[in-house]
Amino acid sequence: MKVIVENKKGLNKDVKVFIDKKTMSSYMDEKYEEIKTTVNLKGFRPGKVPKEILKRQFGKAVFSEVLDKVLKDTSTKALEENKIKPAGQPKLDLKTYGEDKELEYVLSVTELPKIDTKEITNIKFDQYKVKIDPSETDKRIKEIAKNQPNFKDVSPETQAKEGDLVVLDYSATVDGQTFKGNEGKNTQLTLGKDLFLKGFDKQLIGVKKNELKLVEALLPENFPQKEFANKKAKFNCKITSVKKSEEVKINDDFAKNLGAKDLQDLKKLISNQINDEYKNSLDRLSKNQILKELEKFKVDEIPENLIDEEIKILSQGMSEEDTKKSRKNFEEIAKKRIKTGLILNEFGEQNKIKVNEQELQAEIQKQLRMMPGQEKMVMDFYQKNPSAVASLRGTVYEEKIISLIKEKAKPNEKEITKDEAEKILKESQKQQLDQELKDQRKPEKKVEASKSSEKKSKPKTKKTKPSIKKTKKVSKK
Image 1 (cartoon, one colour):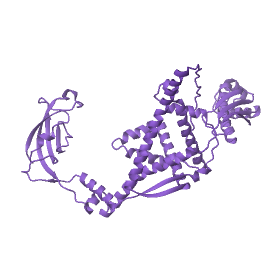
Image 2 (cartoon, helix red, strand yellow; image 1 turned 30 degrees about the vertical axis):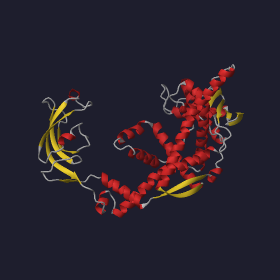
Image 3 (tube, one colour; image 1 turned 90 degrees about the vertical axis):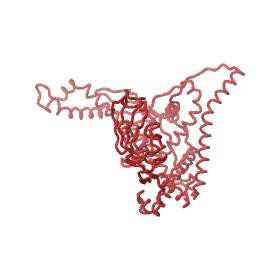
Image 4 (cartoon, one colour; image 1 turned 60 degrees about the vertical axis):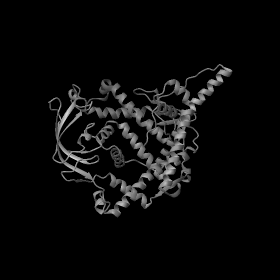
């Protein structure tokens, strides 16, 4: 194989590949030997069909298969040997090919720019540690205790009030007819929350244990049996218990019910929990500082095809006219994103960062925990959408790279209080919102300024439509 690389313009290159006739013939012979053992032709024993016969019968199909294999193998090898990383799918142009001929083709490729990552170790960023005051931990534990149900039975003569827990059995009818789900046993209702049917709770205020009570309430509009929707149902209720809420005592038993060893252990767990809540948000600030620093790195040229692809993503849902108006602003955002992505990817490759299956599954489990009650739906989504899994892999890959940068760079470590953490996060959110609003207004202002200029001078301009090549984005490893 002979390879000649011709620089065209900037990152664009033509990679010319030549495979001599002898090498192509050896590929063909190898394939004929392979199929000879499987071909059955009348008059010939298995494995004994002459090559010339096979050539006449299957020549075109064999050559097509061999050509695909040779192109795939040699094009990959040509790029790797010349250390060319393509920014998207190269365009292949066949020049000379055919049976008993040499193979010549040209790969037109846009190369990824060379990235220098040495300065990454000099990046400075703030790394926060939140010091949690014991009073904050006690306050959180009191909130947990307040929300813990602690109902105790009252005497049979005591009437139920708002906030009490009423336990009841019921059977219901609509116009004398029963319906699916018309009976309930040991149904628990906290009076005042109105979680069963609208107005149901109020009718139970004043009931006592063992009392029979008739309650009327409308079935909801979305009731499964449509013929009963929005109809009044009569509930014959037997009150089996009335319970009053008592203040939860914060002690070792309370802590054990929450999975801790004792109260002291619970305080430690809650303190760590509060710290983690702030740590995650503050870590994102540190990450954003690192990404901002990476934006300052010099990259000589950004591949145009990647810019076009990123603009397509940024302008999704927008009309063609609005996209044109915003294109300059989108280009700025696209270049920053691509440059940052290229630097991170290069740093990841240099440090041999990979995402294994266990790490990917751990991230999926994390997503499941974030959506309680919808675990099956989330899991089905990832099982049916390989692109979503690939995106998740990219997220894990990026986080591993950021973690390594934090280890190698120069953190400015700061120990702060919870109040200081809240102030920092609030200020960060404000800055982010201001920037987003600024970015949204940017294209509008430019368009308005352009219109104003046109009204004053009315120059004659020729509009040109930018050409966009369809290319595949560089995949994350």
